[in-house]
Picture 1 (cartoon, rainbow, N blue to C red):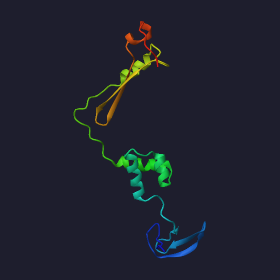
Picture 2 (picture 1 turned 180 degrees about the vertical axis):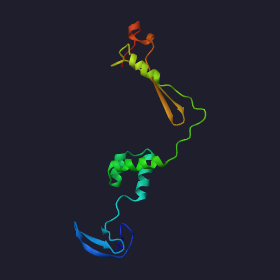
Picture 3 (picture 1 turned 90 degrees about the vertical axis):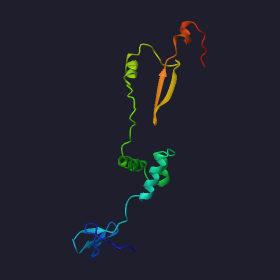
Length: 155
């Protein structure tokens, strides 16, 4: 059986002092604190490290990790956020170019034409620098549209 220690002073000199909710209650002789002998709460550090590793590898979602470990997905989220806050800030390369995303806002705000259902858009993507991807959507040129007289086939 494990040794019962005081929650306040970690002393081992105590006496029994009743029962609370079915658990034996103790009173510390050194500091007078009343406490119960309860099991340690939380998951072991190894389980938290495994959850962080599985998420970082990109193989599993929060819910999948939570099901595997038998905890809530919010607990997994908190573990991963805590580990992320402990990481140092990423180093940025010296030759980084600043890209303004204001043009897309003005394009969507102005919106003279209806680019809704059925209009074709071309998506171009590329890696701006390691780890950062960019996607650009472009409208087709006027020469390929049906309004200019060409016979484009819609699929």
